[in-house]
Length: 130
Figure (cartoon, one colour):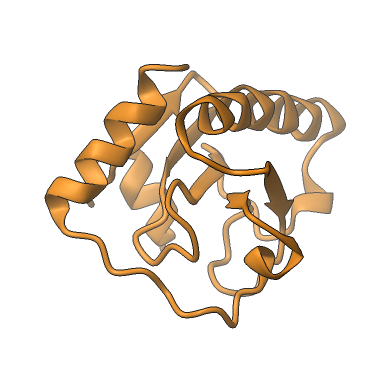
């Protein structure tokens, strides 16, 4: 059965797409812990990041770097943090999270609640810098 991320990649579930190429897809997290929180995923289903082939893993990080640089230009933050947890959805995903401090990277922080218009505004700010 396809993961929720595969359904997003295939357009079966809507997303706020940030970037895409033939192997990777980046989109806004709909339960963000910071404004500009983006998920970056490979298009192939794989449950564990360290099971990816080396070339795909390296490409994922290079793709994530491009997205992180766009976030950094778009969102007021000290830095863009990276987290890979891999327990919530059985599909490899990298969290790119704008940071104000070390506590910004805690997934126990309250989730932010944006309207559709706010998500679209954040999406536009970031995609203009890709």
